[in-house]
Image (cartoon, rainbow, N blue to C red; front, side, top):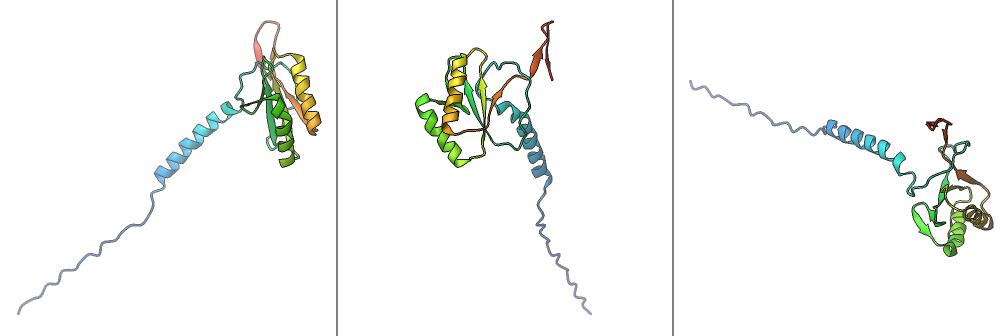
Length: 148
């Protein structure tokens, strides 16, 4: 008698799972990088802001940052704006978003007239909510700077 041996063929099983561990590692490190760098990107123009004690804007407020440096140059965000084009751009922004708030950041060394001129442009453009950005740290008589 002859025995017939049948070999069982093993069926190869293909795993179709995605390993999520490397994806989670990459996303966590990107999140940490963005959390560290985002606060550093809020101001693009180096200004020496005057000291002041004011109320902070809430996070959900939509704001447009206007800056005036020592020389009286006006910046919208990080973009330098000519005074001739400023009125047109301000009206276009207000037309696009009527609830936007304006925050003016003026260098301590700039002339008072430069800030007043910018505020006059804003009034003519129709803006109702304008704020002035200040440095919230206080310098004590002993020369130490303390943040509130």
